[in-house]
Image (cartoon, rainbow, N blue to C red; front, side, top):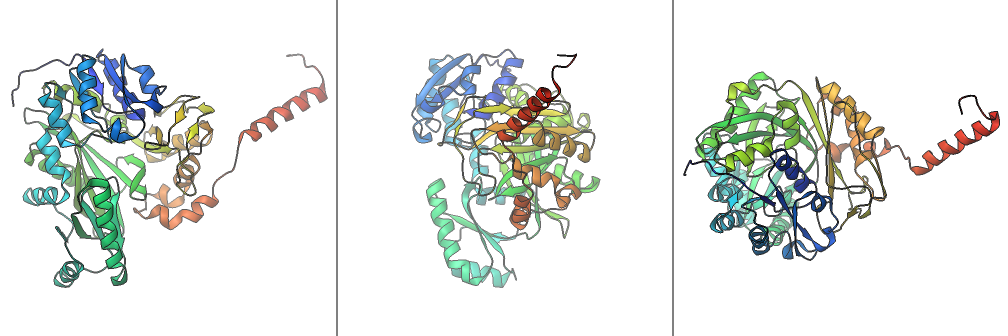
Length: 488
């Protein structure tokens, strides 16, 4: 790697919505102009209004717009952008895209393409982890038959449940949990077909399912000069359908020694694989045995990076830009000591009872404010939420001196300060979760939502704009009844 520093003059963000807006904020801080790309339904999206230059890249389906590599690189060259930031989702972990960006003479804001490729293959990633002495979940890869699975279970004395996963997987797709022998054949077929459909690769692997697992991930930053530093961990255990909806930093599960061990293990792995830029090492933590196992490496900016920024005071997107300019990290491990607690909830446009997507126009939007609140939004009042993309439209983060503080601020933000009308959102569910005694005590596993769903729904408070109208009507009635007042 050449270590001569270089400048970024203009960044094209190969993404949309919350992600693109987030990257634009840091570019504005750095006085770096930006280019937004948009599909036809996104022509009035918030990221389009914020960028300095905009390029239309096609119609609604992602395959002809946000996933089209040629159009992205074309748009960068046409808009005189010299760097591409992929955000998260879409092309963010596509090694071929990263390679093509570099081949086009542009700066890729992210880790090296060969590292993205190595980590994108779960089987290969697991081997690299084992080589770096990182504990991995007992399992087998390149599974081609049900007999193969049964043989492994009997040889290794593995009991159900087990998890069948797509080798090329991610985002909770192509993952099937198997509870008993009778479900094996169907689960095997389902995982293979999902893997083929989502990733064009039907290879699968099988692992023991960690029953009371918790999801802990470590944010790592590395430059091209061999410096690798962790920014501590995040707990991402509260999930629905294998996708995270509430994250927090630090993790309420770990004590000091475990925290040191898991964070330094992540650093060791990233150093071993020659990582640079920012990335996250994900682990599953078995609460009953206090053991953690390697899950995967996310070779991109993560949705939940904001809570790490809140507890460390660093700008993770800024670090990505600096590393892409071949600068050295401006800090050492000893300089990083978080002193706050942060929570993030994902506001998706979904029905909180069924998780079915809710599309349409946001007719009213009141965004939470006040002490300890950070909002990363991709919308404005009057904006449309189109049905073609991920339903995430806002991230709501809160911070406090400790966990109880952060939860209190989140409660205020969700219950009193947030209004979204025109689409359904996960807000009622998120509020029920943070008010649940098990969440408050920090005792939960990845199955929290499925185990408590009915109870959580029963906690929903139904309230709509009629409440507001009635309040005003009552006020007007009172005033008319008592007649004009001195202060009027």
